[in-house]
Image (cartoon, rainbow, N blue to C red):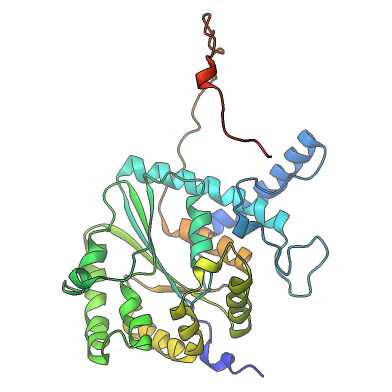
Length: 328
């Protein structure tokens, strides 16, 4: 039996759905049927997967095939249809954030290869980079290490009309740093005593703060890390630190458990996700994120395309014509 069971007991913020979460889920189900029918009527076949999917998203994993999967993982067609609905809601949320000047801060933490980056890509791929800002900071240099610990993160906090998403955050001080020996136990202890007060100050100042922690089983983590060794598209994700931290998995879990106890407050609780099935995990996270923001969808714009412009005698010169090779 996998000994992960006792160490990875799921932590939940509440067994109840919020009204917004229930509304988004119900809307997704009804829209799924309508959109699928409309697309079949228009094209005569089921809708194709979203052409904007990145190579990382397009990889074939267990559960991607059309036949039933023994793992129970979601099929790509169903996933893309649900994602289309939720990404439309993210755009509606974006317009509300812009119109109201709201400030939203989303924190993603998790074990290595838990799927933080892929989730953030799906959140941001249909939204404006001027509103949704993805923050993934490098290792601190000597100057940054001389600063107050949270200083470099505070400089990235959202301004009016922004959604800032941290791909790892100030919680490095409670996870990777103590496990890898980058800080002392006393520094971690002081951080865990201080950070709830910092987050309370954020909330009191009007920032909407949402924190996610992504869990993944030992077997799935092993599979994902192994795939990075052989896939040239993913090799950049595999660092020496990743391999060292993999061998210290249970040290991370102990640090995670202590972090939850110290920093999951009434004003900034942790939302914990089982992300062995990345498709279901991404949909669940986006649905939950939407339920935490009190946005109102904007009215549909009354926009009509103008008549095509007249060329007015314009002739394109040879110097303006395409000149790169076209092997595809």
